[in-house]
Length: 319
Picture: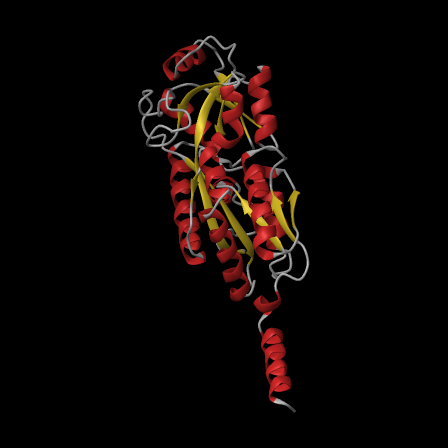
């Protein structure tokens, strides 16, 4: 055997032993637990374009909405751990254990975290026809209703859901939660007057606020959003303890080989730290995040614990 043939043989053997060397060999699916048009879907489709280019393989977004993201979560957790079926998750993954005690999958053990790539505060919005122009006026308006007001969210367990529940508790008003299968129908419910208010992600709400189809009253971050500088924070609006940020991350089923996880993490981080994705995330009101799989794993565990405390203190009953 010549030296060249020996080298080629060793190279082929190395690729055979290392699944990441050949990955990906066919299209990758990014599964989203919400309908098209919502925050998680927008994030998935932005990431899709960049991963297709970085990995030189087709990346497809697949929407599997329902049950506060649980349908998509379970589907991905039970998929083959080969890196070809991934979950683009919202913060609901950390919230759901506190709201659904009978979850079929444990979020802290069912996945191999790949990358936390964006964080975004929520925005308190109302229908422009509602006779309120501030959080204080909204609270006064709702207190006049014998049964209190109603609010929409993208689903049970979402940060929008918990934000509405915690807001009602801190404002001293009765609230009725109306869940929808995603941000788009939730926002549509506010625009049509089916509900009084909602906490929505800036990516899905910003264009509608600028078009005066939604009225923004406050943002749930510690600082005002540079995209909506005239909108106060919840603290500035008179409601303390409402510092809530949604996050978006990419996860694979538990057992996915570490080299594949590392390769996907590198591709995501490269995309998020470069253009055009970095600017796209910022323009949507999100903070681009570049971290390791281990960081995301610890972040997910800490966030799950934090939300468990928030659910308990708000008196929200598991479903």
